[in-house]
Image 1 (cartoon, rainbow, N blue to C red):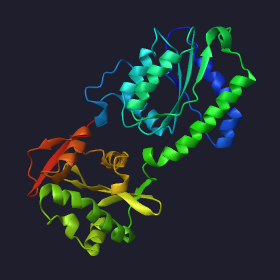
Image 2 (cartoon, rainbow, N blue to C red):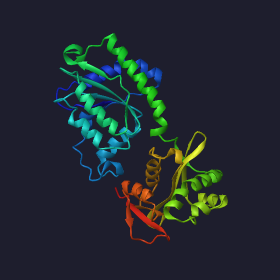
Image 3 (tube, rainbow, N blue to C red):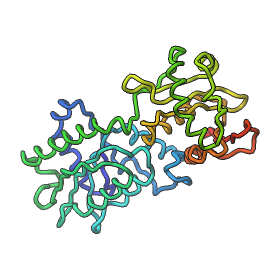
Image 4 (cartoon, helix red, strand yellow):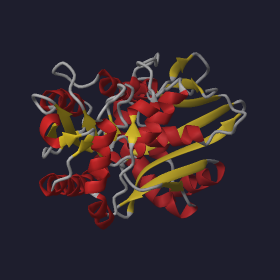
Length: 335
C-alpha cells in the first residue's frame, strides 16, 4: 500500500488504516501481507538519478531502497488524494524513479477528495501506471471527504468494508495470474552438473539468434558437447531458474584477474521480455567478490539487441581485447 500525500494534516494514513482494518480478515484468508510504504516517511527527493530508470543503474541508496520495496511487492494499493485535478507530485515522482520494478503487476486505487472524491487524481495516476505496464484492475474505491470521513477518520460502514474486501480479493487473484510475468520463474539457484544436458539444449536454442545476427555458425555455444557444458559447470559458478519443471534461464560468472566475468546469460524464447534476463544479470553482478570493482561480459559485435540490453543495465563498450567477432562491455561495481 503506497500512501501518496505528504502534506501536513494529510488524510492518507487514516484512509490507509481504514483499508487495512476493513480487509484484515480477508487478507488472512488469502495469505496476503499488506505492507505500507508511506511516501511521507520514505522521503524520496525529487528525482535525482543521473541515468534513465530503465537501466536499473541507481546511484543513490534511497533509490535502491525504493527499488527493493517495489520489486518485492506482488501488487499495489495506491491511496491518493487529488490536488488541482491531478495526483500529488510525490506519487508521480515515486513512479518516475523506477521502471522494471513496476511492470506487469496489478494495482488498485483508493482515492479521496472533496467535489470529485479523488476521481480525477486517480484517472491521471492510472494513466501513468498503465504506461509503466501495470494493470489497473478497476473496482477502485473513492471517498468523498464530506460524506465518508469525520474528525480525520474514515466512517467505517459495512458498505465500504464490503467494497474494500472485494477489491483485495480481486487484486490477489489477478496477481496470481500475472505472477509468472513479473517473477519470470522460480528462485535463482546454483546449477548442478546433472543440468548439463538441459543447459546445452537451452543455449543452442538461445544462440540461434546470435548466429543469425552475426552471420556465423561457429559460435562455441552452438558447437559445445554435453561433456563440455558439464566441464564448464565445474569451472564457472553457474545459476539457473526453473519453471514448470524446466530450466528457463541461466547465467554464469567467474573471476578473471580484477574483473568479474559474466557469461552465457540466456532466457528461453517463450520467457523473453519478462525481466528474467535483467534479474539474472543483476544476480550475477551481486555474486562478485567484495574486492572486485568491475564486471565484464562479451557479446557478438553485431548483436545489437544484446548490446542495448547491457547498455541499459549500465555497461559500456570497452576497447579491451575481445574474441574475434565479439565486443567486450564493462560496468563499474564500485557502488
